[in-house]
Length: 241
View 1 (cartoon, rainbow, N blue to C red):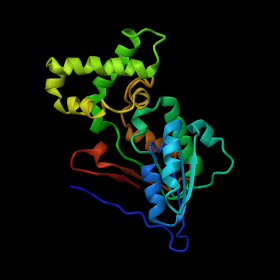
View 2: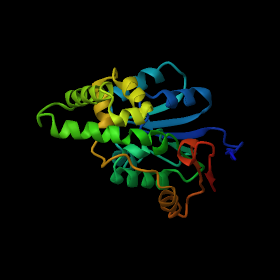
View 3: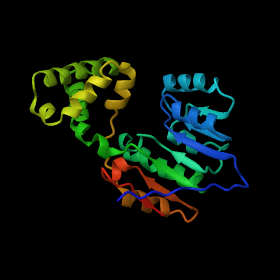
View 4: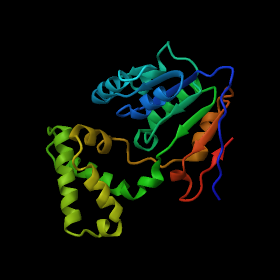
């Protein structure tokens, strides 16, 4: 059975304060800012992502703050206050344990008002975890150490594509992985290197109990923590009050 919960913001304070961690191309950040009154902040360490987000932001009349900061740099800023919403789309399972702890610190430091939203977590990409490990292993052991990361990922993608074309048992058993490989094959190689070759020790599973306990360790958290349907089950979405 699917359960739904809604968050109601204070009608006396209609200006939403929103923070998006790792905003990627900046689309969701800018769309949300254009859709309602508020103060919208976001960070991303990719120079190309930041440039694209700024270009998008220039097309709307909204209060948008685009930062090129890492999570550690973000938490050290003195100009951030509490946020109604903190979100990170598809970030949690691809960052290191260290960065995961910084995200929790960010949530505890600045998210004391309403909602932390973490969609697009591991379960939906679980079948592709081994693909990512294959790409990392190929880049590490089959490419020369001095080879730039964007070339390493290109070589690794070609190798994986060759296995898929040859009818590898893994790709036959997981046809969606082959489709995912084809879908990203034409993407910018700098993006692919960032997405697939980051040394995070593998795709982190979403450990709900550990994360919720870590967030609740701060007594200031007035939190509704939402799990997307992708990480609960195929038919159920859960909320933790």
